Length: 383
Image (cartoon, rainbow, N blue to C red; front, side, top):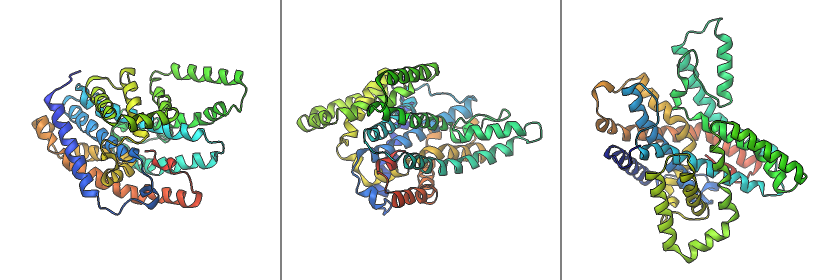
């Protein structure tokens, strides 16, 4: 891994400029619903930055894929962390919101899970329809592989993704569905967390269940992702300590958060504990009000945060459509720096399309949920 290559810094600067310009242009947009406007949380602005960082991550990987022929993680640690730190913070946000909710005594479980389905599935189904169509245009369906097709469809509906008849369907959306699978596994563990926290089951049974969960988790190859949900707990349990520290030592807080942010981005590998721990500390401050000198409260960033799930889920489809279907670039005759010139265009298309999909696919289900069920706003903030 390379730490300070100029190629990575160029993309970093282009990303920052694009996010800044988009936030300024969206600042006065009458876009946010009233319940979001009334909610003052730095997490709203953070989510937009994270989703767009993942876009930059996959924008670079697309160049490597088209020039080298392999979809692989970047050799530049900074660009690799555009994706890694963003996903880690998304998992921390999920853990924070839902573990926090598990501490409430009365929970409407039916509404909780319906809210998750309505939040995630409408846009996911729309994205899968695009995947399905592109796949069928590239693979001939016959009686011999029809059963495999049904299995492939069911895998996608369960967020497993996967190729079909050698066609790499997952690359159509840059392979982002894997994170949704981990989030759903976490959602299914919530009743267990609730029962253990509120002592609804005997201590012996709690220990057995926890041991079984650890066995299941560590049996998985990528078990370390689950640690990010757990690492959100300090932001909840140490809430008053974080707030008191920020109030009494504001300058020290700035130094800690900025230093740990730079350290995480430039000097650590994604999903390692050397990165997870600093990110958990950073997140603890942000979840309890730290806002990077007010930046995370910027209305433009909050709008980007509101459409962050759309950005996250459809940016890969935009990359695939322009660079694999329309083939707008001859990758045999373009340098990486020249390729970067296309990033603002792709960025703009992704943001505009995300606003459209949010308004016409996501929002109808979110608003219906909010008005009919009066669900806690914390269930809407999650990506």
